[in-house]
Length: 358
Image (cartoon, rainbow, N blue to C red; front, side):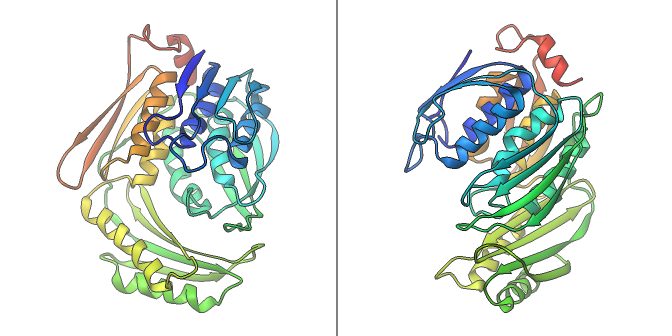
């Protein structure tokens, strides 16, 4: 039984989500205390319980402590079963965060799965649907994990009510250790601004702000009015390279001008573009777990966040891998993931790890 202190590092919900995914992947149970101790309201909230119960459902886990505000949890997984699943987060809780926990074990389940997830699809504090579909999923494919995502209804915070469909195929027989240290040729960028129940002109102005201020060519822009249960606004700027993709997002909110929302997006994208990194900060965090399951890999990114560093600590508790973060220059860092040949000091056996990576 792996014991986790949820107050370590950034002390948020990602510790729990990573532990749930890897517990189901490796068959190792865990207990966690001080859940979300670093947050204003510690303990399990509705969307975290949705993650727990969703992973419990796909692997018939034994669970203790799964209650609102609980700061301790015990999770003992059974065998992961591929199939058709429907997970509803409720309110505006992020459906994409539930996907983070159930996707890795289902990718390793050996048979196809189909998921329907309902909840928030475009929330300020989680990866939006388009980042998952257009940046993370292509990166997974380079490793040998294949899935596709389709949005059926948008869900903005706080109303939620979105709906996505995910088709998951079994992982490749042998996973690839990807090397994303150079982005390759820049192939242009595209900006999408979407609004629900507010004037379309807001999205159009946001697109124009990005196009006029970006340090790089924006080859495509699109301003959309979308159907969603509640009002909302998101700006998403995707950079396309020969070897990878990156995305930067901003969300409209009361009292913040449309120009300020769009400006924050292009400034973050400009900093990334000038850094020479291959992987943006959001993808850098998301790639850690699949790279560890593949037994290694590397990428360059901008300065790693505390969120990323905490995620690394949890991954190393479940899998016999080590991570090295090295600063290359003022704007660029390299992260290397390597398999530890000597797994005796890890909680997972070498045989279990080899089964994970084919």
